[in-house]
Length: 204
Ligand SMILES: Cc1cc2nc3c(=O)[nH]c(=O)nc-3n(C[C@H](O)[C@H](O)[C@H](O)COP(=O)(O)O)c2cc1C
Image (cartoon, rainbow, N blue to C red; front, side, top):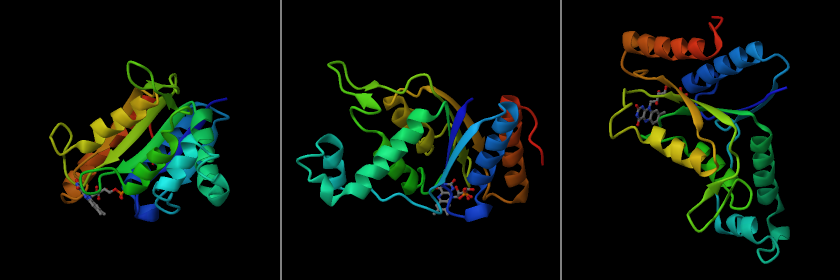
């Protein structure tokens, strides 16, 4: 049985295009791999607190950081990491907000990228501890920035997941979503074609 961890991050609730596409991928994935264990978080609806000093200190030194004062934050990070460790496939819906990923997704990354848990330091630099997992990243953009200096999402997500050893990544781009109905429709068509290539046709 495969475990799929889905992280939606769009702020538009059920109208979030990145979430709609990520949901379609989750459905196609579950149809393809029956019995999939599907863990889903919607950070748009249920955001994760940004990392602060006390929480960060509790990651590396629970005793001196007086963890008893911050049990919830440490427990949340432990839970998020446990979900990620369980996952065979990580699916993220990531809209572009102000040229970057949503801040809630950055907060999730700050909580799961923990030395000693998901990567370790070495004399040659960090070594990821989660190799063998695959990731599918949906990138939804109002404009069309793939391949331009304004596409800061692709490189950042590769680096952040790569830090933890997740290097097998498929990107699904839906672009031009705020450039009028024709462009938006074309952008969604490109995304759904890519999803169909990965998992077969998406039921509409
Ligand atoms: C706060 C905010 C900032 C945005 N910034 C950008 C941007 O920098 N570049 C871009 O191409 N689109 C931008 N957009 C448009 C979204 O990327 C686009 O509408 C996308 O479909 C949003 O995905 P969602 O529906 O899952 O939220 C922005 C949208 C919002 C709400």
